[in-house]
Figure 1 (cartoon, rainbow, N blue to C red):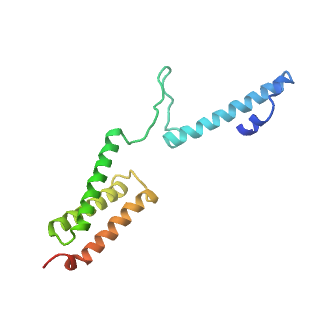
Figure 2: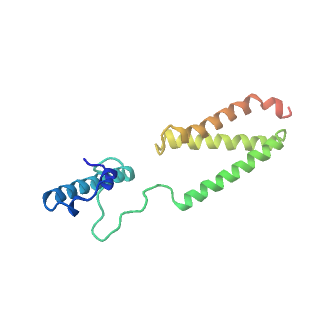
Figure 3: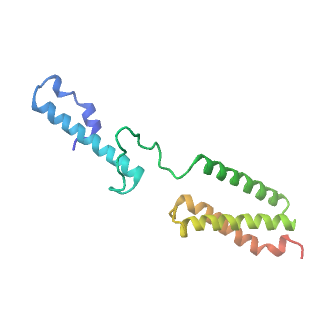
Length: 153
């Protein structure tokens, strides 16, 4: 199959050669476009066969991302809230209620990301999931080990 870049670099033969060669090049170009479109559809919709083209006159969805504007804002609000809690806990680490709230925020984060991976299956273990899991698990472990040092008995 002819690559689109190699087609662009060649002069179009129909300018010089009438007949079958131009038709052959047009077929190769069309096949290349169809292959690229199939790749895009596979990226958007997953395995072949899962995508059925929209009915005539209906546009395909611009995005199939499960992230809605509402869920993005909610996640941003959660991130801001948890960072304020954790920053406040870093400066007032000997304050028992603040320590407990910060500890609970790491537990909630670990349970949330762990359940998205293990229960709901909405994410795979990779770089995007490893960061929150490592941070929350290391911090929970550290906070449990240092519980008696920072909090008055």
